[in-house]
Amino acid sequence: MSSFYAVILAGGSGTRFWPMSRASLPKQLLPLLGPETMIRRTVTRLLPQFPPERVFVICGRPYRDLIQRDLDMLPPQNVIDEPQGRDTAAAVGLAAVTLQWKDPGATFAMLPADHHIAPAERFHHALRAAYEAAQTNALVTFGIRPTRPATGYGYLERGERDGSLFRVKRFCEKPDETRARAFVAGGRHYWNSGMFVWRADAILAEIRRSLPGHHEELLAIQAALGTSRLPDILAERYARIPKISIDYGVMEKAQRVVMVEADFEWDDVGSWIAVADHREKDADGNAVDALSVPIDTRDSFVVSSDDRHLIATLGLEGVVVVHTRDATLVCPKERAEDLKKLIEAIRAKGLEKYL
Image (cartoon, rainbow, N blue to C red; front, side, top):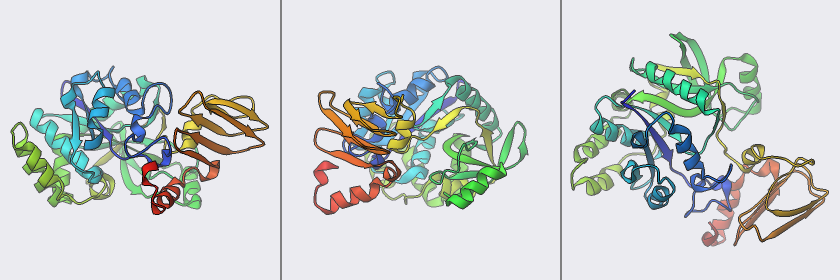
């Protein structure tokens, strides 16, 4: 598998992790699940399967230097910066034309920077199965068998068997709770992990079929690779690409999408509650990563970026407390996924410096 590459998507600012995530320090550069940042955890998990020279990262231009410093095990040129965010269809296309220019037979895994996956060995086995399927020009995704009726995830409906994998019958948008419960009870729906494996030429062919405007701009960028014209061409042509996700723009229309039924533990770590779920709990069900004195406090999450700052809680239950040098979040756990509303209110009050 010498032509198998990993590409990590490291876009977005992660507003659901405010106040620790900021415009200058996005979610993927936070150590949410341990001492390593989320993106470094992702790369470390991949390195037994891929040598460093075959691991690439696509990120926003403002974060390139931070990511290069954090991922000192990778060649600096493997961090590819987008001039501006144009959603995941554009990022996938940029990865595809870059790798195809580098290696015409390239196959690559497209992986988010901020997932929890364990154990790594089972993930590697799934990647190898996906690689083999991709050699037939299939577009391969990973379906996660749901453990609860989650309404925050998209779903995949399993179709007929295709070799050792399954066809994807359809992509399903995030459901309400009633539909989510029906999905789980029916046994044919899986969480959409947002991870994919495909040949570079195969995904570019699907982009050409479904998003011809994207394809035209991407070919212009590919023609400039390896030349002094690249910075100008990339800035000009990438800005013309409309924003659309790879799921909506390509995968829902693709002719052959197959699914690896994942047998590894997976979580997209999309909120402070998800982080708390992966932390050790005390006898009262609290997850604490701070200098803290909790009295009559239960089922809460307390975290601070300053280990000299004392957080004392009294008589709380089901609360999230996140402290940083200049901002503190306090909210009920059930509201922890609604931080976008809070961010909008902070911006409306002219307090952008805290974002």
